[in-house]
Every structure is written in structure tokens, then in C-alpha cells.
Length: 418
Image (cartoon, rainbow, N blue to C red; front, side, top):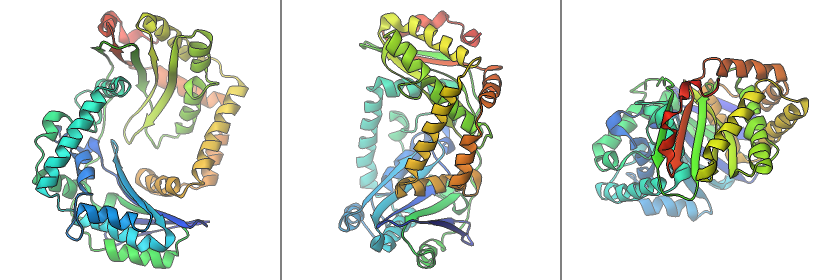
């Protein structure tokens, strides 16, 4: 196995991860997402991602799909807060076709007006579906409160009002402003000859010009409580505090902490809240790390009659973990982190994404040995130090959806962890 990369004169970074498989995973990752939107652009990054498959100067929407599927491949995309990705998987003999299709989508999308109207309806339906899914909605409300009145806090899908207004010129402007060569990575993983594949990528992407430099988005965490009264069988809640940036030196300790608290059936929250007390079916902790901020928290769904009890018991476990972690818990967390990473490295789709995100976040490739070493170096003391750092000035956020959710309104959020 070997990983090589090259930077084109226009700033685009190319990565080729050579592994002995018959397929090739190829993608274009852009270091821009919904957090780059202005307030009246909420949802435009996601709509742009949808529209990229709706026709180029060289292919209509049907031809894009057919050319990939005619050779047995598949193509997809996603939009997150800080990254947009377009990727496909084909047999290695069809890698050149894959690069050609991706470059065509990035460079030559025309956003046909009739397709915009059609896709507008699809996305508005998607927004409605999200609203009807309370365990999605409770997270959306949480993020809106944690990053109040900021792009990071607005929904990736947008709103019905904003999506209803987007025009062809709006999509082109957002693309020109944010799909710039200096924040673009072409990442490939498969049994591909570097000399040949680098030449092909360079032929397809070198003509792109670096006309704009997107501004880095800084997000500021805000504390608060948000409740939505809904006639549901269960009450959904998300509680969290500010976590870490994605390049923070303590990021591995935070992942271990999250696993110990609520990462699996052996975690403290699962054992105490579900197994011993029978207060819920689903409970887990989570961490999200971004360029300028992050989140550390937990989610649970429970009977409306048990919400107070569940929150109190979960926060008790949260506080306990800052004072005592057993060697067995640490070893288990490290084993889960290592196995998860190593298993991911056995998939060329995961590998191409991993290396692309390395380049976007760190400006370099972090190899397997360095990751494993960082996991091995996590200690109980490093987690205690992290807990002290996170909890000392924590500004909690609580999001609740369900019957009588607003009954929490008198809760003093600022002192909830004291």
C-alpha cells in the first residue's frame, strides 16, 4: 500500500491511495458546506449538491446516471456543515470514466431551470419529512440553540421559505464563491497507477481557475434551552456542551470519553439508564468536531413521565465520569477506537474519504501508525484533564421534543452541571 499526493498549479490537491482491490473509489471533496451560507442562502449548498446531477454542458441527468450504472458503478453526494462531497465507485478499469464524470459535474453543471423547479419540490418534501421525524428534529433544534443566529446553527436542508426562492443565478454564485480550487481535493483509492491517474486528473481539473478564497467561518457557542410540544408517544431529548475543534490535540481523548459514557451496550449510560433502570430504549453519547467549535453530548428517547428522572440520572453519570474511569473502561474504549479505524481502512470508499478530510482539516495525510499511536497514548489522566477543560466553563444546551416539553422552561440551564 502507498499513498501519494500532488498539488496542481491551481491549488487542487490530488491523492492516490494504492491498494490491491479491483474497484476504485473516486471523489471530489470541497471544504465548504452549509456553514458558508448567508442567511438568505440557507439550504443552497444542499440544493447545489442535488442540482449537480441534473445536467452539464455534456450530459443530461439521465446520461450521468446511465454512464455510471452501465459499467456497474454507483454515484452519490452529500452536504455537511463544512464539507460537500461528490463520489463514485467503479471497477478500476473504468476509473478514467469516473474522473471524467466527476470533473464534468464540478466544472460544467448548468442547473436547468425546469430541473430547479422539480428538485425544489423534492427538497421541500425532504424538509417536511425531517420535521415529521422527531429524533432528527430534536438534533436540529439543539444545533440551532447551540449556535444561535449563526450559519452553523441553521439547517443543512434549509427552510421552505429559502428553498422556494433559489434561482439559477443563486446556485451559480454560491458555486463560484465556494467551490474554489484551493479548498478542493480529488481523492482516489484502488489499484490505480499514480502516473496514469494523476495525468488524467490533471487533464480534467487543471483548467479550473482559483478566482475566490472563501472566508473561514468562526462559530460561537451559546447556552440555552429549546422545547417543542408535540403529541408523541416518546419524549426526545439532546443535552450537550461545547466540545473540541477537529484539529484539537485532545480529540482522541474526547472520542474515548464519549465511548465510555455512551458508546455502545457496555457504556455507562446504556448500562445504567436502559439496562438497570429501564428508562429508555435508545440512549447514546456523541461528539462532533468542526473547524472552529464542536459538540459533546447525549441523546435519549423516553416516556414523557420519565423525562425528569432520565435527565437527572444521565447527568449524574456524566458528573461521575469526570472523577473516576476504570482501566478496563479505558482499554475497552481504545479497543473500539482502534478496531473501528482499522476496519474502516479495509474499505476503499472509507479510505478515499478519510484522506480527503485529512487534507481539508490538517493540510496533510495522517497515516495509520500515527492514528494508532495517538489512540494508544490516551490515558485516564488525559481524559480527566479533558473533562476539567470542558466542564469548568461549560454552557449547556438542552433540546426537548414531546408532550409538555415546555414544562422544563424553569430549569436553570447555566447551573445544570453544578
